Length: 572
Image (cartoon, rainbow, N blue to C red; front, side, top):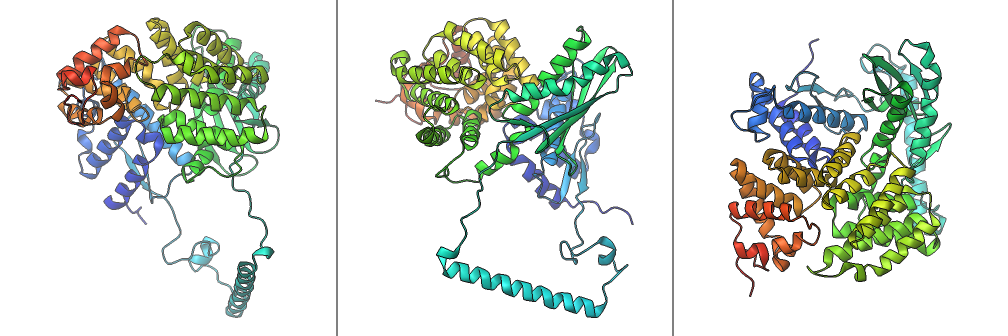
């Protein structure tokens, strides 16, 4: 029988599910690209789904756009393919249709996900029995049916008794997510060069060592998840293919390919690949944390007795969104850990970092933060003394020092964090931003771009340096793209820079979208837009670009420098 094509309603249900997933929703351009190609395909307009139309209709490129000169569509399509693969590999799908984008094309494909026939109960035996190829004898069917009712009756009786007699109930099972456990297996040498057997054999232990430097993971030998792969060489360039699966059971839940830099010898190339793969898996957006982060998103409050891993998941959620409620929840979580373990360095560092962010976020322009952060400085110093081998602890020390205005000391702490764990892309992105803010524009941008490239789904804040650098260099299209990605987790610089760049390229739709967001922000209203932004950025060239762009976007002059009302008028 020919395959049944999915209905438009089924496809749109699958589209809505994808657009609601954080991996895609955090990047407005990726979400809009997905919506665009799906709707075009449903409308029967496959022929119009071209790089040019995507660039102009979705990505805001001008009519003079040249697909050969500007690879933006290919880049965004590649990101979308990666996210789609990740979504389906981690088992998030609930809709009846799988949406994919084949390599080399921008036209999406829709595939019905196989399920049991609607007239057959789920799990009703082997397929042959459901199709009528084999049936149990009638008398045996009736016997089994009777036995089933008996079992159900006994189960209901036990449940009722336990409900009526609370003291007889067993203690509830633990539901807290566990620290991801990963074993690293062998990697096969597919280069055809037997002299590389020893180097490839050492790749698994190198990856395991790199992963063990993350405080949020447990590297084991014989349980949990299993990582395996192979190494190939094409044209002098090494490539690693990796597959993550349940240990001794089930198919792959994640896979990836990473290409090593050119111009380095085999040993250096394989070492780079080990670090790069650890970065994909070990940073917060990696597949290892997906179950735990989904669990956390479904919780209303912090558990009474959280684990350290739950607090680390809460910290990841805060880093992604910079929301005060996540900061408070994370602080409370770490404090509960410290009540039982006063010398837990991770909890001390996490709590100090969250409190330092809150102090800076709630301070008024002109406040001397070094004085306000004295307690957090002392707390992070204590954490470093206890956890001197933790990259996370040094990373938080760098952040706190930067908030207090001690840039050189912050550089030292972040450098130490990266030295302890070269796969810690958070520390690399943070150092890139800090160096950019210190006037080291080129060096800061290089570090920030390396962090973005290393992580499959970078959190929104990774794009901060890219946003600043694009606006400084007057690359308005790039500034808008990065600002929209940043806006998914930053409600100040993301919307402001998108709004400042939009009138420069005639994007009146973005002006209409972001102007009320900026004017409606309570902290901008309380201090004025530029004084508020100046608390975090002291590069005058960037502030000048923002001021000029916001003026073109119709922001009232007084709102730029003084407290104002929601309608933009000066607050008396």
